[in-house]
Picture 1 (cartoon, rainbow, N blue to C red):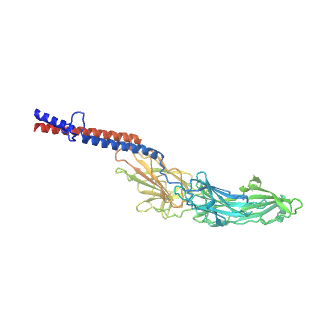
Picture 2 (tube, rainbow, N blue to C red):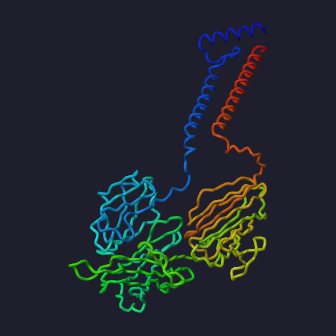
Picture 3 (tube, helix red, strand yellow):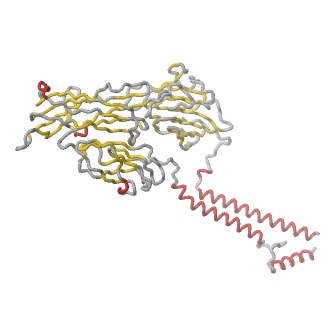
Length: 543
């Protein structure tokens, strides 16, 4: 037996000296070529994993997975009334860098501006373009559209506005502001104004001698657009100048009362217009033209609001002479359907042990647009998502009434109400308004992990996951046209969580754990190979 062992040892020594790669019995502390290769491969893979992780860390830290913000116009200069006829440039400020190669269009008056000579500044966010010669006392429409950001994000809406140039003398025009919630289509409508000759030299008895002012109607169209600010769309339009073609025979103080006619728009089930009831008092101060000229001219214009007691408020700026109307559209969703446009809240559970019969509690707040101060509240029905049947029950909340569609819950505006939903139930609101603000908080349920996705205007965002045994809040949302939903899913893990989640560990810590596992496997592999060699030697020795 000793002879065989010595023979094996001599054979190994010979092979080592000749550069052999298949040692039968490696000496203690030495590693075979095959093992060295395996170790080199494992070490290389580990180093590559470490390098990739280190390079990816900044990307994970800075990555923005949210939906890109649409390109929009922040401001335009000049705009509004009393624009100087000497204005020769238009400046448009965008909210982000613009693709300056594939330009959109800017329509000014009856023609498009020449953008080939335009200049860009502030990191290609500010556009300056030449204006044509402006005529005094004229109204110019403005439409900015079809521009694209440097990252390829298009304008969600065009921007429309207008400017009114100064007249040859002192003058004033009516400004009309139509305010609507974001994503509301403007109505095709015309606004009219009532002008009352009120007094001459503060004497109402001489009002009959006042000349008639040039009061024109103001039109809005469904194609009118502008940029939303704070969830609100404001479209401004101006009338013609009030003094255009008007002659005052004598010097003095000419007082007029101007208000808006409130019968020019008829509300419907789906459209509501809230008119401005302000009454303005306009005083024109008229003087004789300096000699040798003859005739009169307007030397001053005062604007004051008529208060409730018929007293006049403080003098205001000419640009304050504005009538503001609020317009609200109601979505045509009287019948509650699973896929109704408007607002809905659904519930589902996930997990093999999750209960399909457990009710989950929610705090729901639904606020009507501010213009609808006297809103009676919103009806909402609970529906089975599979059958589409209305199944509203007392388990869901306090039953407020019944319609042909079934029992419903009632949500008072500006009030948080608690309701309950279980798996495959959806709460559908009826006849909601564009611009309705809403917020949903799912209250904590023991052992369940809540999550939700928000669909706004038919576009679903990324899922938001909460923590086990904690509330989860959607934050305030605003209703726009299309489907608006909050879909809640509650997961009950099959194995109770211990609080240590791999996803919450730092990537470097995860890598250290992986390297530790690789090292352990490598060590185990070496010991196993040594045992195999020892077993082979023993077999040879005893054979």
